[in-house]
Image (tube, rainbow, N blue to C red; front, side, top):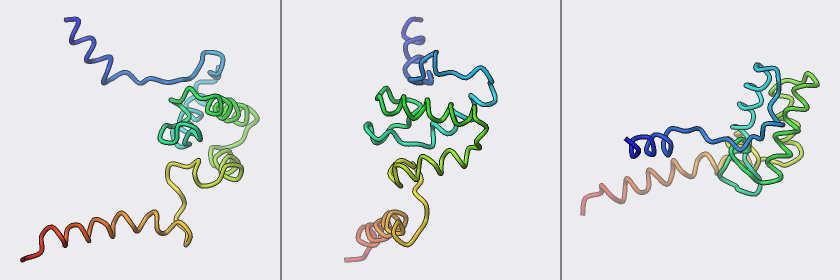
Length: 122
């Protein structure tokens, strides 16, 4: 029985680094803050969102998001504000522009090249 509980804890527990003093009283705003936190990358941890990161900058960004939500700003306004300060790196999905086209096209091109090399006739 204890192995089943351990398995469930390891694979199905949604671990968040949010501290109790960061949580907003308004549940609707808190849910929006969590959605925003999942879309923003921690600048220190790199492949972790600010929602799950324990880094100081992630905590500062979570606090900033909640402060701006409390001030009445929308989700898009907050993301645009943080994006303007930290650049494309802070977004998990970079915008599709000419200068970021390589980020979107190279994986597809790489897939086709590998497929061609793997399945070609000798």
